[in-house]
Image (tube, rainbow, N blue to C red; front, side):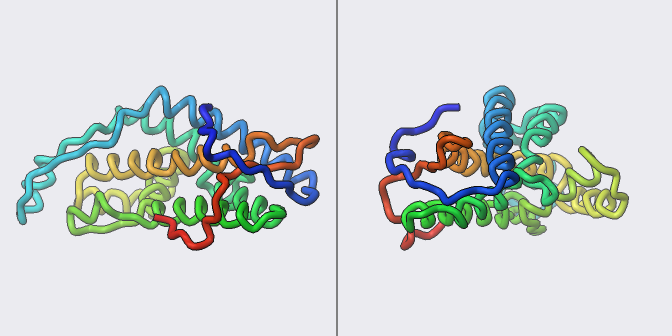
Length: 218
């Protein structure tokens, strides 16, 4: 995975990690590299268009987007779920919280918070579905697809997803799912850059040479 030099100029020690915390961070490193490989294979950009009209049916019918094939979106989802699912030890916010707890430098903490807040803001976004007057946050659309279609068969969530498709169409829903996943790829890469040198012999993290405490996430 390519790491930008300007994101890693400052090295900060972290306090002693528990065995489980270290295991989770090392596993996050592996999962982030797997996700990066999948991104290089399946990422097609994120462009869409539709007619500007108050007629929702016509707007849905005219929708076109650079969404990969469904199987390819699912392949991305398989690699992404390790950062999303609450039960996963490599869940994005869990790893960020471990690093924040142990970082010995306030600038490092401010950058970890910055990256984490960016991730959370993207997960709250509903830009795609909002254009069709049925806003649903990215986190929720991921939840519906993952738990009713890709990885589980929750019938209640499947019904909610089908109702959403009635409102905005399956094409729009799938595109938002795709955008939701690729939209946080930069934050996953940033978190990997923070921990890429960390192991049992090197308790250090890398961040930019900058204080992010006064920055907003987006």
